[in-house]
Amino acid sequence: MSVYHNRRWDGDFLTVRSLLDANLLGHLSTFESHFDRFRPEVQQRWREQDLPGSGILYDLGSHLIDQALCLFGKPQTVTADLRAERQDAAATDYFHLMLGYDRLRVILHSGSLVKHAGARFALHGDKGSFTKYGLDPQENRLKQGERPGAPDWGMDDPERYGQLTTTIGGLSLQAVVETMPGRYSDYYEELAASIRSGHKPPVSAEEARAVIRVIECAVLSGRERRTVDFT
Image (cartoon, rainbow, N blue to C red; front, side, top):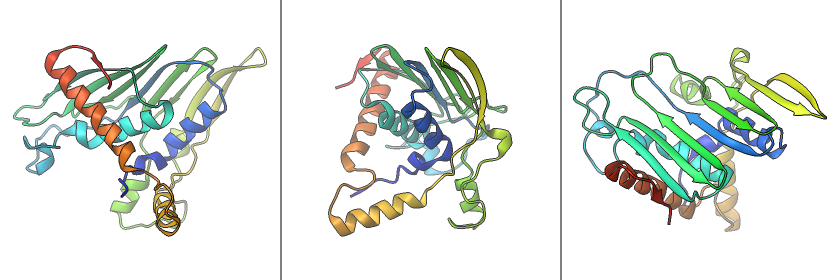
């Protein structure tokens, strides 16, 4: 059994992961991840109805949470502000989560009334910062009928490359960081290898369960307006 947390293979997330692996930002203090959009009209579909598993927290939130757990593991605490911000909204269409890890704070945010989106990622540590705008292009290209292997598949627009400000050898450095190519096809290749070998799938059921547990803690935090210990 495997869960399709495909955004582990977003190019921007792969780039962020490589920067952290290279320790270019030092000890991380804040990690902020946004997935905002502008959809002022409530649509007649199950995701926007008052049903189990509906709402933006289960939809986009599950991907942002999964990315955070991949990078930092399970949090110690969860604090959440959940809202139905649009008129006539029946399900959560706004969330602001803060996951607590010792000295690190992970902020995960999504809104439905964001006409001009800010940074997709913003990371700040004791050696430097990294900011990245724009979304991974793979989903839109799939919607247009393209498939992995098409020319320039997963390649980001150079205008959306991230900005790194760091310190190396005592010298301050500012650099544009080329976004790594997105690779949704890797999920399927790893899944096929798992089926053949019997080894762990690319996303395990246990990992997906941890994401759901964070969501459950967030719902409790939002309802009771308090920070919840993750257990």
